[in-house]
Structures are given as structure tokens and as C-alpha cells.
Picture 1 (cartoon, one colour):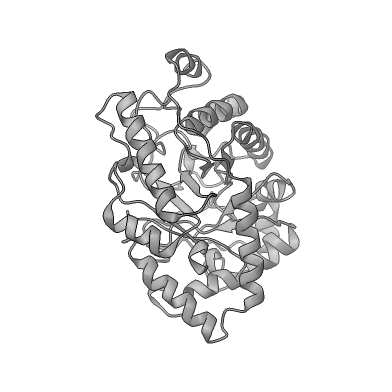
Picture 2 (cartoon, one colour):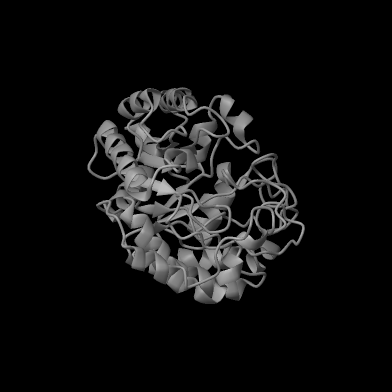
Amino acid sequence: MLGKHFLVGLRPTPDLHPDDRRLLETVRPAGVILFRGNFDAAAPYPTWHARLARLIADARAAIGRDQVIVAIDHEGGTVLRPPAPITPFAFARSWVDQAAAVGAAMGRELASLGINLDFAPVVDVDSNPANPVIGPRAFAAEPERVIAAATAFAAALQAEGVLACPKHYPGHGDTAVDSHHGLPVLALDRAALAARELRPFAAFAARPDTHLIMTAHIEFPAIDPGTPATLSRVLVDEILRGQLGYQGAVVTDDLGMRAVSARFDQPGACAQVLTAGTDLLMVCSHWSSTDRVYAMLADLERSRAAGQLPEATLTIAAARIDRLLAATAAPTPALLPAATFAHHATLAPQRARPGAVGQTVSLEEA
């Protein structure tokens, strides 16, 4: 049953890779995450759509559970996985005033692919112009505008049957380091964090329809020195759950990212995530092999046997995962008419040419 605490990013192939099939059958994770390589982008729409539907069906069958998360990062800008004719909306900054319309369009398109969870919206406040990884992915530099746009987006997305996942708690907007490549360290204390970065998360924490929040791999020495937020009991259990009152599930960002990857070669790291109040560990294939999941699952089992992972913690986390799974739909893949895509194209700006938005890294795996 501990396998349900994992979300697995599939290898970048449009058919279920034999190694992934074996992993899904053995671990039985809560679900899978799709990336650009899982789409047969060179094929016509009906062909790549049918192939994707087969991939998702095969993944569901391998996991062997009625309720399975099929997730994707679909924000806009360069954080878009599906090929044409899926609408290539630009970064969120460019449609802050059309967030509800874009959320509805994205939700309808993703549901038509059989996807039931989107790792969006980005609710980071764009508080550092030198930030190398957030920038125009954020709706605004003002918490109030972020809250208004992000909540409208999430409500519209979920009305189409696709769950939203606000990210990156407790706020990635003020960092000067990309957590894909290193560990950002922010000098904010509790008061400063609460005054700006936490405000969008507080808004989502108070909403009963917030089913999942994603953590960031960021250290706050003034709050919990030496411990990234992903592993921090202070930031997750004490502040997010205790202070903000959030009762839903929490998922890590990809544990293969270089900000934290090496920590998960150490015994007890996975148990630390769960005892911190996080429920789901995400492991994708871009930054490290998903085969790490076998070792991570074994580490969880050893921690449990040694009494370092209390049964009460597991029971509470499993209940949150079960509630999340119960909230996920199982949309039937279906081709959308050309008129739908034509309408969606009128709603908001389309994706800018790669590199035109000032980003210093590729966001393929953001």
C-alpha cells in the first residue's frame, strides 16, 4: 500500500515502456505524469490522440485501480506538453484578465485527452525580476491579482473535470536560483513570508475545492534551517496545515530535481517527507531514473519497520490520498471539433516564440 504515496513520470515514449509497465504493476502508484515525449507529436491529431488514449489505458491497467491520477504540467508558455491542435496559450502573465476563460478551455482540452489533473496554476508572486524560472509563469507581482486570477482559473479548470494543483508552496517567486539546478535559499522570516508569498496559498487553503497543493524545493533558514520546504514539518504541517488550515493532499515537486535529488539517496528521506505532512512523492524520468522509486519504496518500508514512520502518519496521509483519488474524474478521450480549437484561439494570446520571454532555462520539465 505504500506505493500509493508515489506519482511517477512516464518515460518519454508514446507507448507504455516495458520498464514503466513493470514499475506500475509492482509499485501501484497513485498515478502517472505525462510529458512531451509521451505524445506522438509528428502524427496527425487523430493518430496521436488514439495512441495517447492507449498509453493512458495501459497505464491504468498496469496500476490496476479504478481511480488513477493522470497528470500533466499545462500552464501556458513553454510549459505545454501536447502538440497541435491543443491550444498553445502563452504564459499566464499574458492572460491574467482572461484566466477563467483560459482555465475552462484548458480543462476541456485536457479532459478530451483523458487527463484528470493539471499541475497548475502557478500561484507564486513574481516578486523578483531576476527569477530564472518563474517570471511570466506567475500571474502578477501583486498577491491580490495572483489570487483573483488563479482562483478563477482553478475553478474553471475543475468545472471541466480536471483538478487543479496550486504551486509552488510556500512561494518560488522571490528566488534567484532555479530549483531544477540547485537549492534556492530565501532569507524571509515567517512574517515576511506571510505578508506576500503565502497569501495565494492561504486563499487556496481556505477553499474546500482545493484537493492538492505542490511544494517547492526551497530552503528558508529563518524558518527551518537546513531543510527544504518539501521535507519541512514546520512549513508543511505547522504552517500550511496548522496555521492556514489546509486539509487536502500535498505533493512534492519532482524529487529528481537537483535541489533535493541527492538527499533521496540517504536513508529516511522519504519518511521525512511524509512525517512533514506531505502525502505524495513525485519521481519523473527527466532529472533522474524513475527506477529510483523501487529504492525509495524500500526505504519507506524500512522506516516503517523501524518505527520511524508512524502508522498514524500513514493512515492520515493515505486518507488524504483516497479523498484526492475520489475527487478525480475518469474522462473518456474524445476528439474535439476544429471549431472548438478555433474558438479557444480567440480567448487569449498564444505562446510566444521560445526564448522571447527572457527565460534563462528550458521549462520542458518545469
